[in-house]
Image (tube, rainbow, N blue to C red; front, side, top):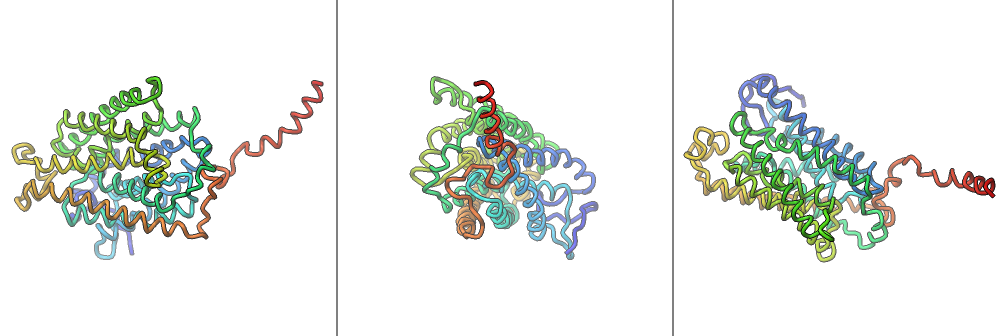
Amino acid sequence: MNFTFATQKATLLLPRLECNGTISAHCNLCLPGFQDVHAMVFVGFGFLMVFLQRYGFSSVGFTFLLAAFALQWSTLVQGFLHSFHSGHIHVGVESMINADFCAGAVLISLGAVLGKTGPAQLLLMALLEVVLFGINEFVLLHLLGVRDAGGSMTIHTFGAYFGLVLSRVLYRPQLEKSKHRQGSVYHSDLFAMIGTIFLWIFWPSFNSALTALGAGQHRTALNTYYSLAASTLGTFALSALVGEDGRLDMVHIQNAALAGGVVVGTSSEMMLTPFGALAAGFLAGTVSTLGYKFFTPILESKFKVQDTCGVHNLHGMPGVLGALLGVLVAGLATHEAYGDGLESVFPLIAEGQRSATSQAMLQLFGLFVTLMFASVGGGLGGLLLKLPFLDSPPDSQCYEDQVHWQVPGEHEDEAQRPLRVEEADTQA
């Protein structure tokens, strides 16, 4: 097996997985998008999860570990599925962006089981999830011809429900023993907001990184831009409305404000219009905020799903809403609305091989396929992660950095105890 850098013209297999036209020129234009997506994966996701008061090292460190592993493994998996020619896997900037997309899905799943799993378990989870991610993406984008530029289905819905089913299988009835560590403190929430701001700023690049250059890419960025702004306003409004004494909840602001980027992932390259993007973003921010306030406790008490980071509210529900929005907008696609741009967004409709209604139905079918792959994969992954030799942390030591890390100051109390006694004697 050999790797070949994509520097010359190549036969297209998938719009998202190979470079168009003159590869070198196109990939140069993709490079800024890759840099933004890369920062989102390693900085945005990592810091977003540091809200746990005693799990900051693990949140950032395990994000670093899983992302570095996933992008290498996904390069191989996606390479075999999409760009394996004449004994070579062709790689380039776009393959790196797709690897980061896959790593993003893995990190979404991490959010559902954060604090309750060890590094060996997480690496096994990534090993399985990357394979299923690649297969699901291949089925949707290549076999069904589904459009999903920003990954509402392939990234967010898949990653969220894979992680939620995994968390259900790994349910811990005695997790109350670590409940006192599950909350946040002032500085941990402040650091988590760094992750939120990084994700919020770069999300238009995330959704538009691999869309067709020109009007389609501009439209994708604009729709994401407006949707994020609207979801932020919706989040602040609902957080104050449902909060105690009308005060804002930082958990809502950190997460639900980002739901606008998720909800337009599928439809952002389509003719959503700025008004449609604003409406979708406001709805996503509202639904996500209400989910954190009311649905997360029900999810744990009734369905026995312990969702540490609330990925169901940020990625799961907005991802499904985004897929349904894509169904609606795809069904309304016409030559009059898109003009010459119809070929870049819906090539099969432009060529007359498929009607807009058929495209919409396949978009809906793609959502069900994604949920099936995520559920089956999460269930299988949960069974594998329960193997005893994988060193899962005990119920009383979840959400604790000292289980896996050398933490500065962990022996501070013991070291200072004689000094304090001596100081007391001196003062006496």
